[in-house]
Length: 324
Image 1 (cartoon, rainbow, N blue to C red):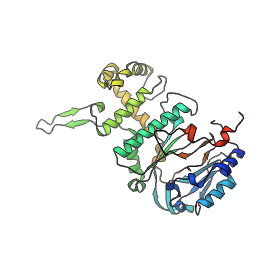
Image 2 (image 1 turned 180 degrees about the vertical axis):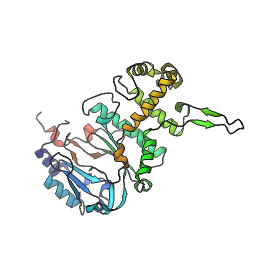
Image 3 (image 1 turned 90 degrees about the vertical axis):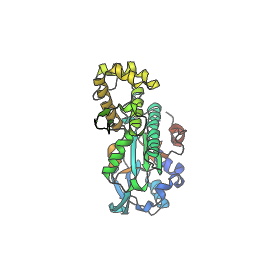
Image 4 (image 1 turned 45 degrees about the vertical axis):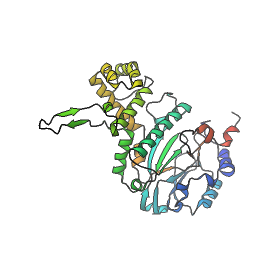
């Protein structure tokens, strides 16, 4: 598994296993307004601006060409063949397991451990997007080496890059919360609270993500703002966070170094998600149901986030028939 699919295996997949029934409804709805792209040689999607009249014409193309990779635009156009007259675009969160900055496995590519951690991350993101921001039309796609959260709520579909970037920073926990409050009395006194002392809103979200990061550190990560001595002490005192004893954790780290830690974690949070994908209004993504030939895995819609296992639901049949 995770080895490159041969042309023979790709043909087998698209002729014997792939079905139009595997295409999610959010893809087939208004399929004529989407741009398709293909990579035929494993060198990137250089066959762009393709369109299809429906599922059957797409089926025939995939069966005949057996592409190395297949993509579809997140955008809807009145003229997708020329990417003209843009209408709206899905809002995307792209989490690739191999690019997660803090991974328990620290493998060279992807493995069962980091794919599991990627699923943890996207599940938390979806919970926050639904709970904090009220988004509802959310679909999760296993991409072959990670996950795509594809959001089709109308207010986000019609949003520009600036708003998409702000929502990304909120959901990712990419900014340290502003926890300075002024007393409304005549003294006009200001009070500073740590992010972990406020159990609601963005402060809660940020604290949860920082805790997750710290608890998943191996100890040899190279993170901006965290030197080896600080890393050693984080590992030594992080047990306090098991019971949410942030005050004890901070006092042992020290206030100045704790500030460095929090700033570093905000950067980690942002780098966990591919920000370029989130703000791009004309991006193409892997077509759900298509084959990720580089790792011989299927790109599939996740029906149940709690029970999904890519090694049971996203492995093509030809992998089990290999002799290696």
